[in-house]
Image (cartoon, rainbow, N blue to C red; front, side):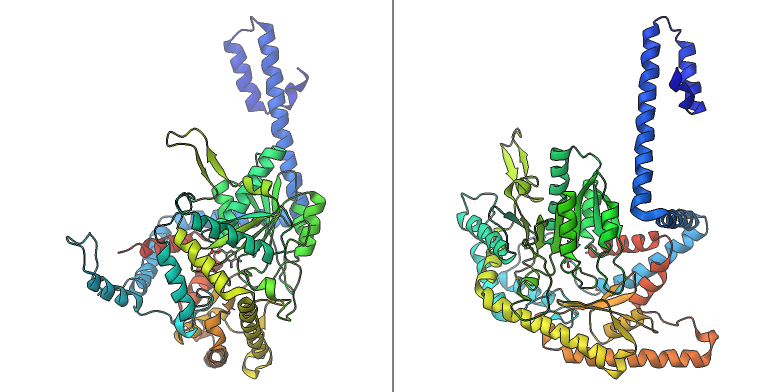
Length: 568
Ligand SMILES: *Cc1c(COP(=O)(O)O)cnc(C)c1O
């Protein structure tokens, strides 16, 4: 056979053995076996050649080797961590860290209820206990001490939302005939958000229980669409490194290969040329953020849109965080950049009504340019013994009460209210940014990442350890977000923060001053004192564990943390 020489020796031998055991009394059989063998081998070769070429095209020779190097280091360090002696030491340290965490997370002296009460409690007893639970010692979001998390929090809105919730406590949109009001409200929420993002005629959407579900569904729909229309069985998507991790979750859940693209300084937007190089015939989705969570930067959505049009690929824009701020930037007189359906290449947008839409948690929307695209996220089972079943997203039954509370928020705040909130929140973000740039205490030390146009401000430290600054702020009662790659912290400005931003800025000045003083002392005392005596939580997690070549320690810590969350 002409192709035989291409077979690896070992394979050839095993085939020869097969032949030896079964004499070729039927010559045709042997010919077929050889032929099939060669065809299979050819496709194997083609597949791997194609992969290598895609890799080289996408990452370049240097990038490919850099990836190989990182991966090798990760694997080798993984072996090291599992070596006898090291493993027990690592486990001991993780357990120590978790015990410390438990002390903070799970109060030791509270009464715990681990079984049903024999008799139900009286209303009075329950009310009393609920009050205790609501006032447990916590970071004071009510006083504006928390980045993000609670975006509105004013009593009047909360009261109205609770009233709406109360009217629809039993409602479930899975039964539109039983709860027609909820169906109507849900459809109207989607319509209102579509109009906010300048959706063209024929556009459609769904409501979901949060940004993560919106993103999961956008990825699933893109994968299903590519399978149905292009026969793609090994889907890939291309993400900015800074895109929300929900996309990586979608990659894991739905088996979509993820390519991450750097978002380099000075503008921290995704490098669109690199995105372009990573596109291949398995690509099912491109992604941009408006803005991203870590740095609050809006990617160059116009360029991504052009690329998506040219390569005829879907483009998702994650506006979960931008939600109801980004659409109002222009009217509020702030600098803005194209982000919505007016860009022709943009096919889906996620927008969280439960962030700057001020709806209660458990509300988000996913918008599609076309109704046909939306149908790819639907699940329909025509043959279940429980009856013909159809649901739009991940959940089956859903809380109609949350939809009612979302609709109530949108209707009660209205365009004027959101415009005013945008002025306040984005206005405050700009004031904090100015303070960081102009204050003598901060200007020399902190550097704002890129040109944030919305409500998130990320900064890194020039000489100090930025995680020490984060820990210093925690000690003053602030809950800011620690970031990595590069090390930085951010604040997501909310309505509660707009009232106390000046204290935030002056506390930041004090903390930076104090850290600088510590650094001076350390420099005087010389090398001996260089190891930090007491690293705070952020410094420990990101400074030590985060810099390891293999992050399995961080993974174990995080899993331990999740376990703790369920410790009664
Ligand atoms: C918050 C956020 C999400 C996801 O939100 P959840 O509602 O927490 O699931 C997605 N993208 C960005 C940019 C976000 O900030």
